[in-house]
Length: 185
Image (cartoon, rainbow, N blue to C red; front, side):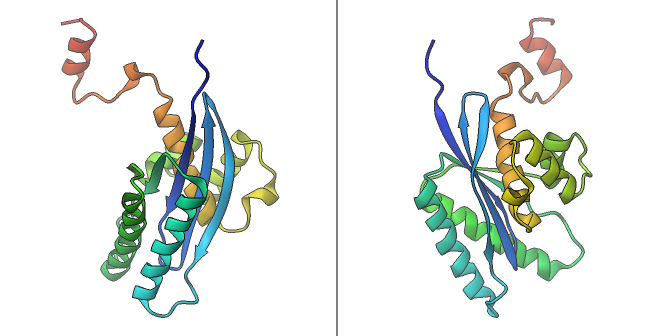
């Protein structure tokens, strides 16, 4: 029997005012929280200063925890185009920091993260935080007051769940392809 390999996953919930991050250590089929926090961008008036701060902080988090992979929440589509552009830039800068440190990135839709954790793609941020608290056996105080941080931890936990799925559950482009791979046709 080979010993379980350790993997560190950095989860990021992009934001233009508050960006959340969460770090999980995975050993075999068990995950534990290493870190949880926010990057507070509210004190920066200039959007470009915010982007520079995001880059510096994500680089610092990567250098501190040495994640093997990054899971990042994809921006949801809103009605305000300017807000979407700013959010996309914030996400892009966080991704650039991971690329700079050669950390592979996987992007997850918010509904996929919520579905993986709560079983409901329309779950509230509070429901996601509560399920994470239960699954990771955390005290309420450990989660902090910012739901951006627990959303980031949710992205990391979703990635943990996805990577622990058996290969037979992998995505297929059609029912015909699945049947062919299983030797049914």
